[in-house]
Image 1 (cartoon, rainbow, N blue to C red):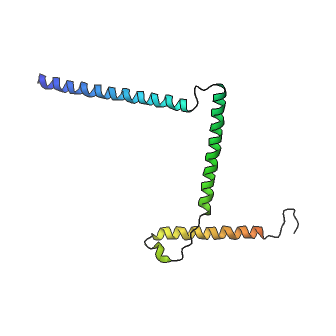
Image 2: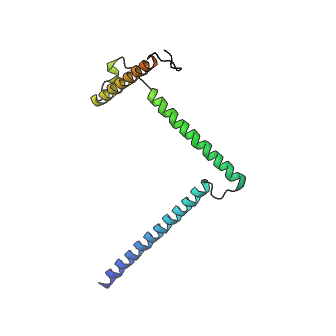
Length: 127
């Protein structure tokens, strides 16, 4: 009936209004975040402030790279010797196999380094 249609139309309009308000809020938030991001990125700085900001950004990039390299080196250098098989009880066999494979790879790399170091050649080409 007409009353049901009016109720349905009113509900649709209310739903559309809420959706429009939500979209407006999201757009406004996205715009605010973009402006904040640009300000934090140095947009708007001039002269010595801009130069200093760029110096800091470069220094930060160097420090981040150094940190990542240190983490990688530490990870590669990590070793754990397991003397008691009971200490790894419950560890899946696939993990144990992976560890054994990595250990073999490490041992082979160490042998290759020793062989290169003991090949009899000095840096100046003499033996």
